[in-house]
Length: 115
Image (tube, rainbow, N blue to C red; front, side, top):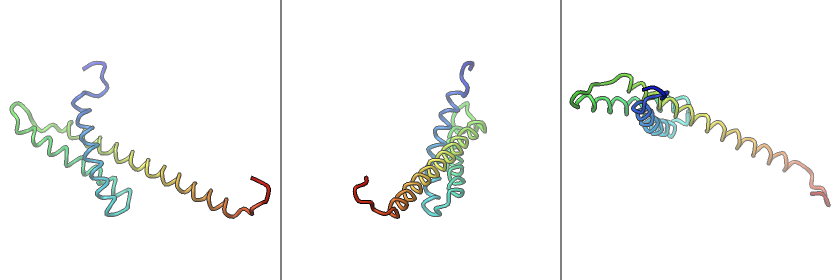
């Protein structure tokens, strides 16, 4: 296919990988509270979804287990794992800034007549 960077089929596999990866990430993160382990959980979740899908495809007529489809699915898991980690780090930074700002304001003396 010309004009398309990634084939539609591979895009579908990446989407499936993001689904499996999100579930894997959240399951592991809930148990461990460790972002690195959760990232590996995202990859594992995508690997499971991709392997199940390709195993099913291999039972269909004129079809086979496609390693490239599995790689695309795992890619979706990697992308969502990195994305969730980035969002969590940004959220933590925002929360830290809010807390720090609040603590600074509490330490200021109250000046009568000033806003």
